[in-house]
Length: 260
Ligand code: FES
Image (cartoon, rainbow, N blue to C red; front, side, top):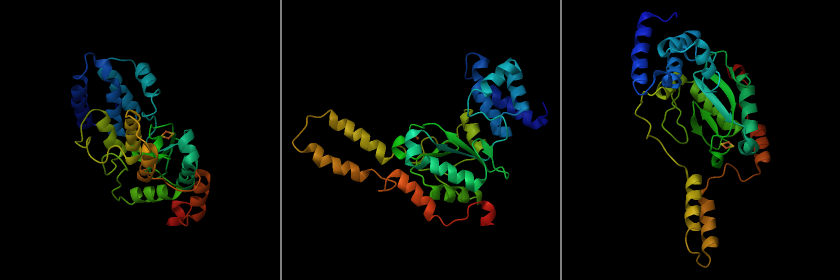
């Protein structure tokens, strides 16, 4: 391992705190991998060796776990992971167009990192936020109802160092290393901060509640417009038309170089 002595000392102290939470040291592998990412920005060869040595595992065992979960990166990750949901509902609602726009603007493809180390772009599967499609995750925080235009504003704000708050969850969005430390089990005190469930999800709960009540004449016709009115819609147009219109109407440069 090539960690500096002070880095290694801190890592060992943090690792001991994590391991103490589990009945067997090997059970702490997942949080320790996150801890290494919080230091190196990915699961580096040093991080892999540290986990193996600390937990009494072989490097093959650690590598098998680190390569199984997509949250663990085997190459330096950007400060911000941009995860665009391209599963059916988000894809149809504009997620495919959002990904293409980001890919074009950042000049990277899936699982690639921009040359300045700011962004890693990923296609991701359903995040159980389909009622806010299309959804983009920034370091696993939700940005709901995105468009090709809004995501360009998002990356420009992050690149400029402006504070960016997710639609739901705590803000501002933290860096990949900061979030990795939280995932390792070190609280940042923000877990109950920011908006929780949004109006679309609550409308579903209300509808479910209505289903358990005795129907009254006109109840559904009275309630349905109210629920619809409380549920934000990204556009009144069809998804395909909306995505095409958003791209056509955009006037910002097609790449950061042109913005220069
Ligand atoms: S399909 Fe995108 S969150 Fe479910």
